[in-house]
Image 1 (cartoon, rainbow, N blue to C red):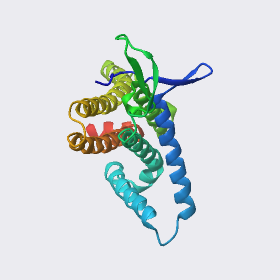
Image 2 (cartoon, rainbow, N blue to C red; image 1 turned 120 degrees about the vertical axis):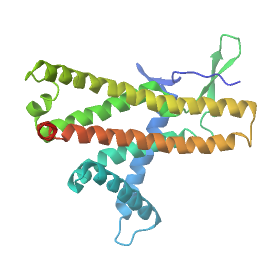
Image 3 (cartoon, rainbow, N blue to C red; image 1 turned 60 degrees about the vertical axis):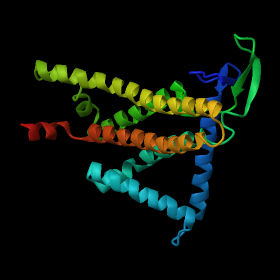
Length: 255
């Protein structure tokens, strides 16, 4: 039975910096995305090839979803790079974590508490590490705050959270401010829980019933990786849409 570790295992050190197996695969995902970006940039043409056609189709579908939510094509084009990058990065890192060899290639590192040789996988799905999902959630929420401040101005945006018109508005504003921190927790644990649970499931099924039986579960995890990337990016978009909305206009409509 393979040893299941909640935290990512260290592979090597760069001075005081610890490089874990999940961090290593996230770097691989990042490098692949950069390489794909350069390839597409150099091969963009009026008559698209197969790769360009696939990305154009995905871009059109994503822009269509964003238009439906934001109601403004200019806003969709403005926030598209952030949403598309978040989606592609999570999707690629999730799928790379399912590749053959990931989890099986590794190094031997001493003995465990049972006196057996401890095996450390060289790669691990980045989202199966809570540090990765927390960092990604924090970056997404920072983008949400940044876009809100740029769209409304710091004074107007901060009035959503800190207003003293009456005690009710003050209390609601404080709740809104606290909810910005709970979004980080919700973001990170949702993604971490789904990916880590899938990784554990595949490990157990592969150990008990190897070869053919794990295949349906593998395809299920491919779908889960897609869904989780979509949910994370869409929630980021929803929060951006809420942050750039004019709060005073909503108050007028409500009254």
